[in-house]
Amino acid sequence: MNDINGMEQLMDYMVIILPLVLLNLGLVIFSLIKIIKEGVANLNKGLWIIIVLVFNMVGPVLFLLLGRKKDNYDNY
Image 1 (tube, helix red, strand yellow):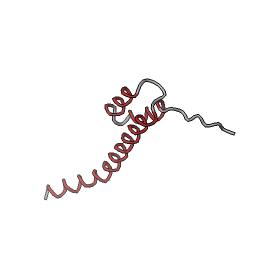
Image 2 (image 1 turned 120 degrees about the vertical axis):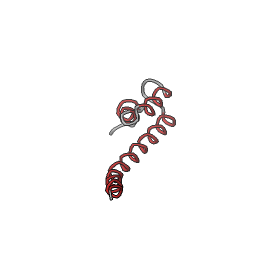
Image 3 (image 1 turned 45 degrees about the vertical axis):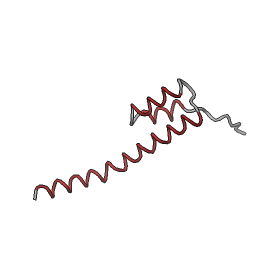
Image 4 (image 1 turned 45 degrees about the horizontal axis):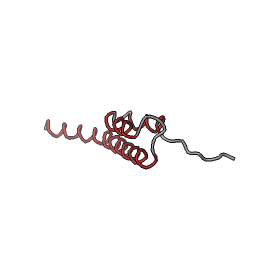
């Protein structure tokens, strides 16, 4: 009986944790693609890749806020 309650708790946690893990994985992949294809505004590509991979939750957000190259579009 105790194992069933434990499994139910685990499933309740998985419903919350799985979307967060997938969101984090998506951010990491998106950031790595942006770093490799578009380059970076500061530091260098290798350092940003390390930051994104090592600081898993914060790294991609830091890159998207601080490290992306700015688009040079003219605003009319």
